[in-house]
Image (cartoon, rainbow, N blue to C red):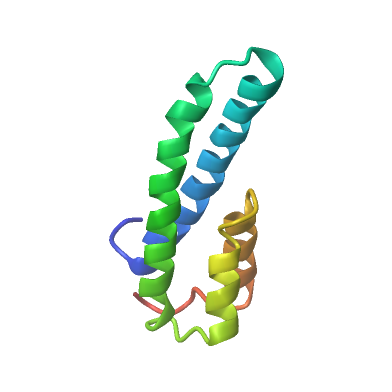
Length: 102
């Protein structure tokens, strides 16, 4: 999976969504359940690193995949809402935007 640009993109899209889930759970425990910051202290930095990795891999995949501005913009904006990267990856895959060798 890590040997191709598409594989790295897909891996980071999924990892970004999972780290978002971890961060949301951490925030739930921090603000609702126990008022403890441990979950946020753990998942905050993890999510931050994966988020940056997703943005970087998106910009690296853009040219070889021949994404236009709209597709690139959607890929980057997808990193903001929780689980948006998974939705974008599925959308791009259905439309052949992740089909080229790379």
